[in-house]
Each structure stands twice: as structure tokens, then as C-alpha cells.
Image (cartoon, rainbow over the protein chains, first blue to last red):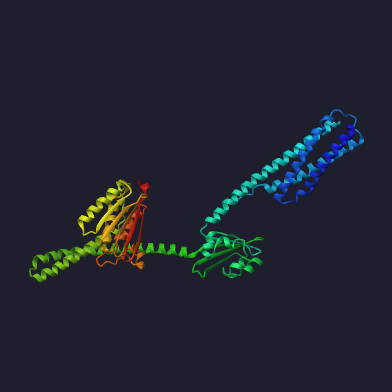
Length: 105
Length: 365
């Protein structure tokens, strides 16, 4: 029962990370103003993940032998985060260049 | 790795993402603010420019049109902004085809033209690649007026120098004529001869006065500033003027009991005296002097006034409509006021009278 609940929470968490990944993959093509909205959406999704993290707290120490399904879910989340971080680095470099004030009067 | 450490690592990465997103957002808003402030400054500059500025997009829309351009082209600025250029202006208004200039790459264009409203403009058009055409309109009428004024000022200086040389040349023989006339006056006894000699002496005396006035005007003068109560100076000048000449009725109103200025007392008194004498000679029966709260002295008379065509010439040396005048009084007065960094202005209505306004800088105090 506990494991089912944990799996459900991890899947929800994965779903939010996947939503962030989807936005991250598309944001590089967005104009500046729309990109800021996308950034805001990502922050909202992150706050949703934080809420799930709070729900995950009771499970942290209670489960030691993780099932195959949970391990796979965790691995999946890890790969999504890695992908987000990778694309984010590229996107942020690009945006920082755009936002750098040009030399002028 | 157990569940706890895995979730902890996710939390760390999630936090990293949040920090990065927050930092980017902050940077964006800071730059947006800077951009808006630069944009505002640019708008103010364009708004205050004395030259006209227009920007026509490649689609032919008027994207920028400053107030100076509106004034030069006699149109209302707000009514044509973002409108189609060809709806309001002729394709060749600026001496080239706007359609062609917007569709074909072309070099920087310059043109001089006179608009239907009589304004002479210098046009400078440059292409902004991929965006449109920027046009700069300069009012040549203004430039020409300034150049003319400079030319006139140089010409006046030459006239002044020449007049001073002539005055010197006249002065010596004039002294001789006056001396010999005095000798003849002593030796000739008949009344006819005496009348002739008297006429010569009066003539030389008038010439002497003119020569002195010319030399006075042409001589560069130095001002000796002292602290003077302007109200008292006006009262003293009025008393002196009314006692020494046949003067019209003079009234003086002052918004100040005392008004201290650092001025050359003697020269400013001379200006005041000149103005009072001019008013009297203009057949005024009443002269009103007013010192306003702002320190502006207005000398207003009800004399015959000045013909509109003569208004611009009254400060020109040797210009006079009087039979006895040298035409140097007002020119000299203006030079004195200007040397005080002051303003002397005149307004007049023929048949009704003249008002002269003098403003002396209090910073001299």
C-alpha cells in the first residue's frame, strides 16, 4: 500500500519534470517576452514538485528495499532532470547573450 | 543508493533550477527597465530636436515624426503617426521618389528644397537596412536668417570703424574753420557779415556734436560696475530730464521701493535719458515709466509711434527719421544694455505710441 502511494507520487513528480522538459526544449525559439512567461510556468511547476516533495517526506526512511518499478521511476526522473539541466545550460547561455546590454550611448 | 539520498539529490537539482530561473528573470527585468529608460530618453531627445526627424518603414508607414517635423511641414503630428506616408505626402515631396527609395537600395540622399509653405529645407535621407528610411529636415530659413544677422553685424562694425575714421578726419579741419570764423566774427562788423559768421559757427557746432556722437559710439567702452539703486537712478534721471529740456509729463510707477543692481551708473543713466528724449521728440505728451515686480523697466509714450517697416531699423546706426538726429542714440543705448548682458526691446504702434522694455540682469549684483 505504501509502495503504491510512493509510486503514485513519483509518477506525479516525473510528470511535472517532463512538463518542464517540454517547455525547456521549446523555449529557445521563443521571443523574449514569451520566454519570460515560459520561465514563469517552469517556476510554477517547480513549486508543484516541492509540494510533492513534502508528501514524500514520510517515505524517505521507511523504504529500504526498493522495488524494480520504483527504481525505474527514480531512474526516469533522474534522466529527465539531467536532460533539463543540459538543455537549460545551452538555453541560458543563449539568453544571457541576448540580455547583455549592448555598448552604446 | 536508497530512496532518501536519491530524493535529496533531486531536491538539490530542483533548487538549482529554481535559482537559475530566478536569476534569469531578475536580469531580464533589470534590463527591461534600463531599456525603457533609454527609450524614454531617446524619445525626449527626438521630441526636443529643433530639426525635423521622420522614419518611414519599408511598408511605407510613418513610424516616427517629431514636433519639429510637424511644424516644418505644417501638419499635426499625432494625426499622421503610424499612417501611410503616401496618404499624407506626395511621393516626391523631398526631391526623390519615396516609393523607389523604400524598395531599392540607394545611397545617402541630400536635397535643398522650398516647400509650398515657403520654408527652405535641407533634406538628408539615409536608409536603415531592412527597416526603412530616416529623414532629417533642417530649416534653412532659420540658418539663412542667422547668417544674414551675422553679416549685418559685421557690416555694421565696418560702418562704425569707417565713421570713426571719417569723424577724426573731419574734426581737425573743423577746428580750423571754427577758429577762423571766430577771428572773422571779431574783424567783420556789418550785420550781414555777422549773420553769415554766426551761421558758420552754428554749423560747425552742430558738426562738432555729430562728430563727438560718432566717436562716442565707435569707441569701445569699458563698464564701471557699482551697486546702484535702480529706482533712485530712474527718479534722478527723470528730475534731470524734466528740468533740462521741454519734456512731456512723466509718471513713474515701481513695484519696488529699492531695486539694487550692479551697473555702470553713468551709462545706464545715459540710456534712460536717451529714451526720454526720444519719447519727447516723438511728440509724446505723456511718458509712463514702470518698473515691474520682475525688474523690467517699461518706458511707454503716447507719441507718434514707429512705422512697422522702420521697427527693425531703429537700432541700426545712422538710421533716423528725425531731421536733427544722428541716428546713433538707440544704437548706442542697445550697445550699453547688451554690454550689461541685458535686453532692450521695442514695440510700437504708429499713431498710438511706443514702449521700450529694458531688463538688466540681477546676477551683476
